[in-house]
Image (cartoon, rainbow, N blue to C red; front, side, top):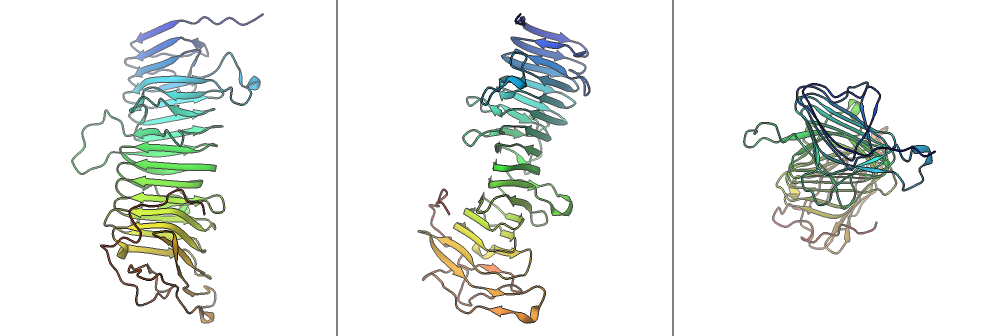
Amino acid sequence: MKKIIAIVTLVWFLPMQVFSQQASVYFFQNILNAKEGNIGSEDNKLKATGFELLSGYAKENIDIEIFDAVNPLPDKGEGRVRVYNIGNIKSEEGYIDMYSGDSGINLKGEIEAKENINADIYGNISDDVGNNTAGFYSKNINLKSQTGKIGSKDNSIRIGSSPSLPVIPEGSNRESTLNAESEGGIYIESEDTIVVDKVETEKSDVKLESEKNIKSKKQENEESNITAENIELTAGGNIGEEDNRIITKITKEKGKTNIKANGNIYLKQNGKNRFYSDYVINKGRGATNLLLPDNNAFIIDLELTNPGLFRINFTERKYKNEINIGYNDLKKLTIHPVAVRQNNREEEEKENGYELLKGFQNNIAIDSGIFTLPSNMMINPFNPIISEKTTENRNI
């Protein structure tokens, strides 16, 4: 006998709490409203299924579990994960916690909480392409896709600080702290500053874009803020800070770190993989300062408004072979530096000869304790190292 599920349109306006009591709620469309209390609880989430759109409001906390009653997880094949649409959900004073052990979600509205948003979802976390404000808005945002991806290459998930916060003083930045984890990639954009705590996808890519800044939340033992096969960071202001770099880790050989900013860039790469980049672009007048592992750096396109503040340093002092930097039509500037053994400074090996492109006028300043550079390399801040057109998708 087949299981029959009643589908209804349900609107709840309750003065206090909406509790699940281990019951399953089947909706067609639903608006939950707990004017003075909670929806669900931390240890007893409101369970929801069968709906086309779920929206809600609570004065305090919201705890919801979304599940697929028709196609339970053991019977699912690849590509059959149910996706539920989520409308506007708001917690006025507390947090929002959403969980699904078998489904994905698609945002059609704003998920907003004063304190925290936690979304732990089995499938993809996506948003509606036609809605420019759908996304997650809180001071702390924690996203996890257990088997899928968060956003996509063509349609990033929007995040930001809560729109309900008071107007901040001019010159200050709204910001959200981000934690994100997925199997299939993480793609995030924001009008506000993104403070990166831990963003991890071991076998895919991370793309973060902010109209303001991308900052780092300091980690114990300088562990990485961002871990991925390839990383793309774009900011309308700064990426990292002088005393608090963004720390990255590339998980595959020849994985790329592509960077665009309009201020300062302070980045450290952990691990042992070489630093590969299609482009490092800084349109601002600030510093571009890279701290890289003990191996070569390879940058195809380098565009700096202030090349005099360009620095590359390394975390260890062993042998360094070369730094390759693309220039205009992808010709290479190759520098053969002084190679230094950390364990025996008396056994220094110097490689003579520098292959310089004719007419190259910009300074590449590197820690003099590691490298000796040609004396004829001069600073010319009005002549960027490469042309305005950069080559962003060049294979290495």
